[in-house]
Length: 172
Image (cartoon, rainbow, N blue to C red):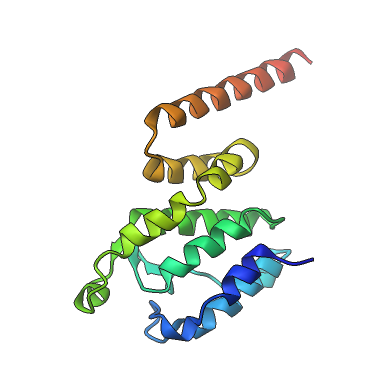
């Protein structure tokens, strides 16, 4: 089976992007591959995106092409810990700002670029909110959704569904 995340990952020459570790981002595809394949946390030891795409929400150039890779990955079957890692990383990417070293190199808009890339996957995040990691997806949507009424409607619908499920559990 072809993985949309791997296809998107291979679309870029990662050695051309700066990474938070101080090297080029040439090693980032291997990190993504390991995470995408991981079935247990032990299988992903040593493979994390923080410290590479961002450090404490301070963004590096590799963050921008990583956003669509993460969105594509969220459409695939993932171990829950990987799904959560991708969502938390995406939240940092859309709510961060360019690292001072990137600003010095003229890349002061990395946050806006990540935001725009994330908006391209708006419905992936809504799907995640209704069927997966609801809280992390809603946190990201809180940042990128420009239609506040739509987001409020989804929140109410999710709360109603949760209330019905809890009521059903108590009575059943």
